[in-house]
Image (cartoon, rainbow over all chains, first blue to last red; front, side, top):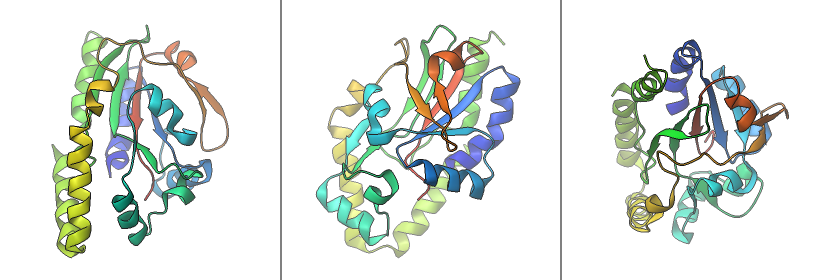
Amino acid sequence: MELDALKKATEEFKALGATFIAISPQLQSFNREFREEKKLTFEILSDPGNEVAQRYGIKYKLPEDLREVYLQFNIDLPKYNGDDSWTLPLPARLVIDQEGIIRYAAINADYTVRPDPEETIAALKNIMGQ
Amino acid sequence: MELQKKLNGLKKGFEAQAPKEAVEIMHRATDDLRDSGILEQTVKVGDRAPDFSLTNADGQEFRLQELLSEGPVVLSFYRGKW
């Protein structure tokens, strides 16, 4: 759902001179499936074991009871992610300027809350001086 | 906030048909995560973004530093296709 919305925003990001990149812990094959199903126009990179997510301070481990719930709903994270760590990244959207500095960060502990793409576009325009 | 409206609709629909126990576990896990202090440990505005090199869906490598040489980067961490 979020990436669907960001697909539309990708063109605006591009027009502003920026690159949009998604990162997921899932295996490359699932990223490929997802890209084809949704006809995504941006890159989805695989982050095995959530190691990059860890460096960004957003990696977390699912509690035991929640793992059971996920399995009930056929969300077999070890299958999708190719490891049995049961870790995920917090949903996070960041804008990084050309100096490598984070200029916008929308990170939420509640995965059902996501910032509107318009907010990210506004942040990008701001750093581009527009 | 079109996106959030859609997400709220999805959540409502899901919680109306999901087992009550499962919904309770999910809510508690989200509350615990919020209370865990994780949000104090994340990268913040003004921090240098940690560099990385990861492969795309075709196995091609992408490095943050190289992408930045072309322009700003919008990065989105997401959980998975499920």
